Length: 360
Image 1 (cartoon, helix red, strand yellow):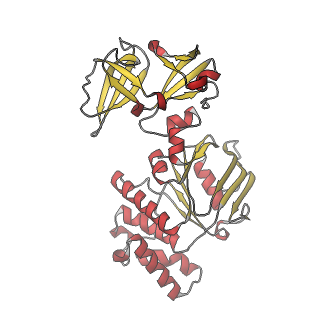
Image 2 (cartoon, rainbow, N blue to C red):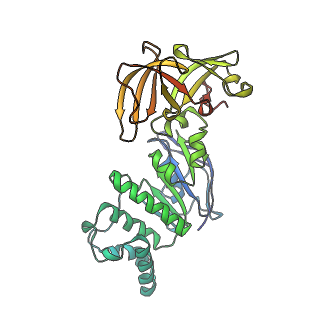
Image 3 (tube, one colour):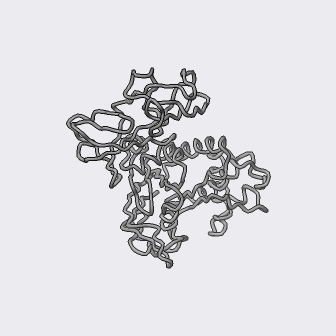
């Protein structure tokens, strides 16, 4: 396996669209790196530049310490798994797995040995003589993955490989990918728009927006200490609540009379005249009216099986900002009822409303 490095990589298309801006990224040998972000953020463009399917306008791409910026894909020793399985329908699973090796003139005994090893690793031994039309979606995805594995490349590149699967298969295949990475210690660069996929799969996660990397770090670090309002709102489900406010005398004053103390020493929002408070729905508790940090009225209740997602409006009359709260399934709440809200002081996030960057 090999490391991957992007050094000042940019991509500007002839129509003027900037898909990537000065990307600097180090992906270690054997690391599972996930590029995540909304559509159009540049994550697939970055992957395609690593693969050699797009040529950077500026900057350089290194694989295993070798400058591959101008090399064609076939000379980069990478394997790519796409959103579509791209299997040959007239070939069996065995033939699909072996095809790339046959095209490279690999000896038949070696092909047979590699196909057998990959089929065992992916649980495909029982379907080697079937054609793609006879397979489930999960099996077809494993064949597409196996076709990349038999080549034993330096780097695996995944472009939203699970988006065509139903919810149950996505969960199962995610687990298979995690086990596979643990077994192979392969270098993987994985693109997805699904933040749940990013958090569960990545050793590190790079959150992208408008061609830039907003934050890179271990999944739980990105979740617990988002570097910007964008990252905070994109990573985590349900999305983080944001409330505008002002800093006065060491406290933060928000809508509907909500007042909260700033972190010790006045760090956090204390460096700005205005500060946006961010709090995740899991970090707000519903209590009796008057018993918390402020009151609200229940607007909508969404049962989610093991929990309730409660939409509230701040203020005793329910005329203020909306806040979403996760509550136990048996919480005594009903639509239009008055409740109190208690904020977890240890899990509040403060952002500069102008730059969007984290303050504390």
